[in-house]
Length: 356
Image (tube, rainbow, N blue to C red; front, side):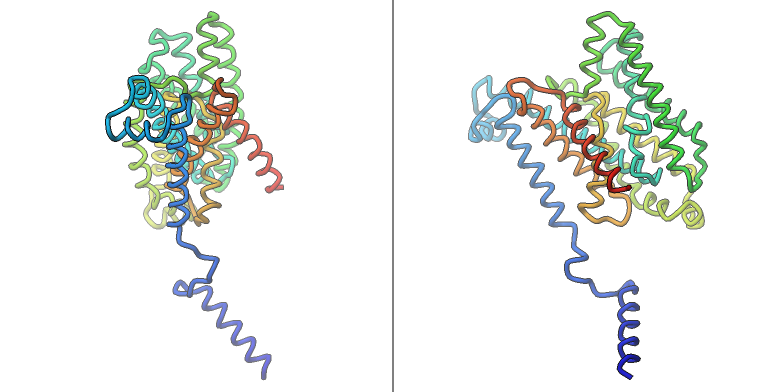
């Protein structure tokens, strides 16, 4: 009798845990608001630290006076308003764009390696920019770099999708990653060839830009691309619900009325725009689009695509990485792409070990 009673009680507990109206278990289900506030606080903290202890040390009182009271010396105002502040804003916006694009690619491909760095879209945008800088007539202007990044990104995306034969099948993600790695290797060789054929001055400028850097950015350089990202990022976030439905499977999503093929094309196009515009501003910053979505999903414990989570975490990671790039070898500054690449390599090794 006691055994029968225990079995009945266990069955009732299982039914309760499986029901949508089950009570929450303490410590297992947590609201994301406190964790979000922690990330926002971390972003604001490093923003303040960058303004005070960036390339030029200024007291917090002077920074406050420059920002909110219009006081301070001419040098303080020049450093804070025209050098550090645009660099900080660019880091936050570019980091958000890369994190969001990585979340889209990983969700569409259903693969942890499905980021623009791995599947070749970043290298494709880089190839477009280098072609404009070293071969084209527009030169290293803002318009030329933006046009080259967008054209290179879309041409690479079309090539990868065509060669992978993406038709909404279950093996879509694996094929995209494998084809993307091959295309990335070929485009990388093309980039090296373009640099070797250029004159010394252009080759040095292209090689420096290739590392990804936020040094010496001004409002004139970042205003237009930043406005594009500020408009595109909220529009992409509106696709979160559709992406969540797509993650249930192509057949089920199609049965729920989602046009699978068109949705995938729109999502990939939006992600390519985010990557291309980010690259046109700061150059190719590696591994951030790979790391941010996965860390965001684990940190917030989201069941599906962590869209706005990845954007917020990408902004935090790039602001922190840029501060580290400024201060690690001070007074010398290293490109932020080298810092994210070093962290990304360590993360890749950890990820491969965990998967094994």
